[in-house]
Every structure is written in C-alpha cells, then in structure tokens.
Length: 203
Image 1 (tube, rainbow, N blue to C red):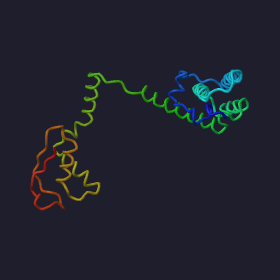
Image 2 (cartoon, rainbow, N blue to C red):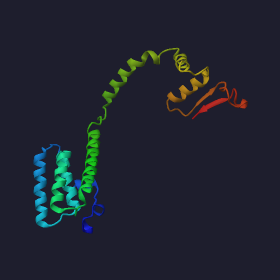
Image 3 (spheres, rainbow, N blue to C red):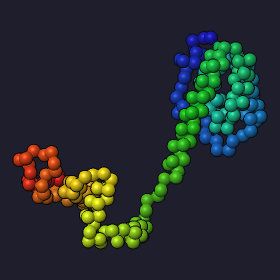
C-alpha cells in the first residue's frame, strides 16, 4: 500500500465527503447500487488505484442511496478484488463505511428535528393558549386556601412540619421577577439561634 492510499492518512470528515453528493431521500434497490459501484470501480481500474477520498465519496453516495449491509459487503469485496489491500483491506473499508453511515444517520436525525420544530406562535395563538390554560388552573389560582394546599401536599410526601420553609420555598420558586421578597418568619430547626425570628430575603 502506498503512503498516499493509507486510510489513516486520508480519512476525511463526513462534511467533506458529502460535499460531492447531495442527500438522496429516494432509496435505490441494492442491485442498482451494486451496479453503480461496479461501474465506478471499473473506471478506477482504467485510471489506476483511486485515492481513499474517492472511495469515501463513493461510499457516501451509496449510503445516501440506501445501500444495505449486504450491498456494502459485496461492494467492499469488489474493491478488494480490484485493488487488493491497497486501500486498507476489508476491515478498514467496512470501518470507513460504518463511520460514514453513522454520521449520515446523525445528520438525518438532526434534519428531522429541525424540520419538525414548532413555528413561532402568533399573538392571537398565544392569547388562545393562555385562555385555555386559565380555564384549567382557575380554580386552583383563585383558591383562598392555596398555601394550605401546598403545605399539605408537601407534607403528604414525607416532610414533617416545616410549614414556613415550605411556604418560603414555594414563593421563591413561583414568584414573578420582582426585585426581592422580604418575609419575617421563624427560622427552621437547625438554624443558628441569632437568625431566629429575623428577616429572610430572596433576591
């Protein structure tokens, strides 16, 4: 194997490999892909041993076309029959194919996420969502015993007493972005005595 054809010296990024071929969303059957690969290999034989970059570009084109593992194996065998181990041998070629296939799958998944992203809501749609949400939470939001419900819910999960700490935590977590909350309440058990009965400020 010549130095210029060593796989570890010629590996290119997936982004570089795909530049030569656009993504093909219409998969072809294996027979057509194998014939296409055979024609390319014949061209290479007429011109001499191809670069490893050329092999990667062919692999990428076939992957985009939907080549199966069976087609991959036949194409790799055809390359080995034509050029021996000059391009790295069976293991190296299959490893290259596998990496390109994984990169291609990741790119397709990223494209799918971007294409299914929700469009920006219009002011009217936002208003409709707020109104629908308000109908759902109205009873709880207007409940005169809201804080009692919060405390009871937390205590039902195993917290013993600590009403003031529960109230403070709830307010700190749900308050609007105002400058600060200033509350006077007894400190929870375990605090230093000099803080007992002092002001607690949440910025």
